[in-house]
Image (tube, rainbow, N blue to C red):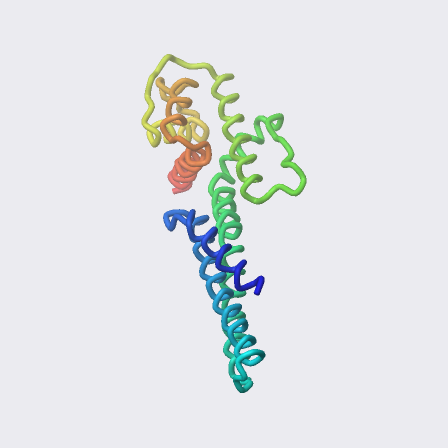
Length: 211
């Protein structure tokens, strides 16, 4: 009886905020689907119990086979819903770390003082955010040390390409300074997005030099 009442309530609570435009929304939708299966399982068992116990219906072993299959499907869907968001976050974090790897090694190697240990037990996503912060801090220190003119270029890819050219070839664009980098970072909106843009330009410049 308790499961027959609790599962529908949880299903509604999971379904209402589900936004399928986000990974979290898909996780909630899957949880809701799994709870719907659990609701079916609970009500079939409840109705069967009442019918046999108080209605004089004949026992039907097939009911248990059906509800066993329904409950197994529900548990599987709930498990996928619970694991979807952390797994996607882990994959995204690994992609970011791979993307910024060469540029991170270059800049943080020059400025090891920016390294900060990630807190114990932090997730892959939090560790990726820490590495992104270290990379951007090291870039800020590198540009601050070099000084520069008062250029105002703010187009993200142009600034990223100028940064990559400067770090690899030593050719510094006259408009490349702390202000232009900060403006491009603000235009990117997210530190992670800006770091990946920088890292992609750095990799492209590396390939040009090797070729």
